[in-house]
Image (tube, rainbow over all chains, first blue to last red):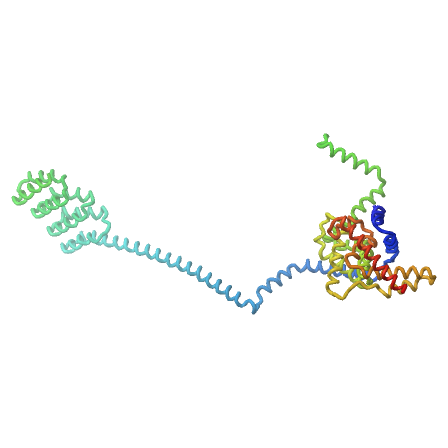
Length: 252
Length: 219
């Protein structure tokens, strides 16, 4: 191969060039001094040591890098300022959110508290009303009946108490006020039923007339039957009789 | 046991045959040679066995020195440059991929080192090492013919010094390093034909300069 190479080269040359080519071959290359070797091995040694020391100090390097990040550099003042501002605004944003949530929670809590308190007050009123209805003083009982208008949710217990008062209270005024109160609660079917049943239980003409007016007002047609029964009663007041007949006409 | 692949069977038979037909020493030689090719050594260096660079140094520092010496004409500087080339081999060991010849890669680095040093000191041009030449003439016997010969060689040295750097480079690579055109083409990253033309032109230029020098001495 090498011989070919040479032949190839020589083929293009003239005689002078061939001679020169041969002469070039005779130029002796001086050997490198022995120092080259020593220097090379010294270099190789230091290089290997360097590489190994680099390996061991990867941790130190990263530590140094971290340190360099956190050391103060005047050139980065703007950057520091920006970082501080952004951190501040982030903290502000999140803490604002937290406070908002917290206050919301508080509001919800307080709302629940108010609701609870209100229902407790209602309960208290109800209990107070029920106990007042049993009071021997008529004025106290009147007060109690008037309290029913302040109650938001009237339960069966209250309605029962009111109907009992309507039917059996000795004082006529109390019964009248109770009737007024029950008319307010006429949406409740139990109240309507109670009012209709109450017709035959009333002895006082005043109450009978008031009930007749109430039935007309509530357009309670089931009461017609009761009125007819009432008409058959003996010693019925004449005025009441006329009133009941009128009422029956209106309702039927 | 059936063979999954006929080619595999053939290959195994062949390798068994080869193994049995070699003596133990020969086998050892083959394996150690394989482990010590330039490429495997350099790949070893790349993988972290840096001390393997010593073997490559033993193989190539003379060749490299010769290349640099004929390119610069200065022994001391060439020794420095040899050092630099081997340092760069260590530093840039990751750029050796192993798909080409180690020698090609080495010459690449050497040329870069050479160009860098030329760029660094613009004044540095090829200078024949006077002390070395004089030492050589002193050491030769004082016979007339030999003196004449050595004078002719000295003149050729001077002519080489006056050659343009890229022409000198191809001559150094082809004549002193005795590389094939193909290898030179790989190192200089051109075609083989291009190198052929370049060598021819370099020889023409050299002849021109040499004849001029000869005329000068005659006068």
